[in-house]
Image (tube, rainbow, N blue to C red):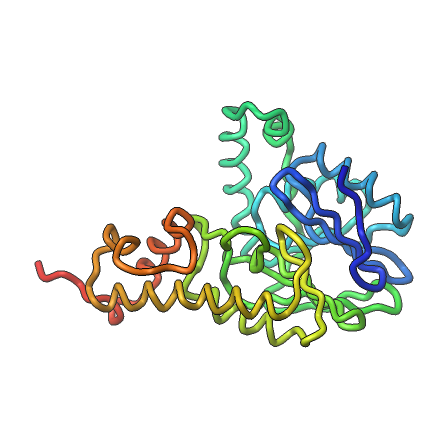
Length: 280
């Protein structure tokens, strides 16, 4: 069973086997901030049992790194523990429709965990922000920053300055290609990671949304690969390569199957002036 491991001073990370998702707890003298709330109410309750093995402090805030269900479906459980729910304003706007779609699809799945997903009533955070906010955990400040769009339109990162820790959500992933979904922003993602890198040092501990804890060098490499994806899309569109031919027309840093949405979204988001349109 997964449990919380201290990766820096009073910063604990639990890496859960289903979906390889991370939940992070940051403690100050007064209480806790928890980043991401798990993929169902049932899994959130299990996570709380794990959390109480390392600290009895009250949960002051539960923060969603973005709107996706595997990071937000435990919101109601954390709220019932007294936590104030927080996310970026774009995530709050997108979560209801996203959650309804996931719950509808979950009833068709056969894995036991999906029944819990389908049964979870999703709670949308009432507190939102647009750019950045600071929270006081008691003699410890943490910063919530929206560095830009990338994995979704509502990504945020959490910086713990005194511990030199950055919680990156799914803007950074270990062990797999970055998740380019149907709501991703592949052309924005490299610049967003430039902002993320600006919040780190060479000694920073970086916690991705999925996978093992990494460092700044890992983020730099992933930023460069994501940058190659964006520039390849731009080059193909500029040369007039049709979207249906794009994946086969270039070399990519990730498997083609991981880039289907990236190419489609990239073509959609490029301004008309950067696309060589066919004559009709």
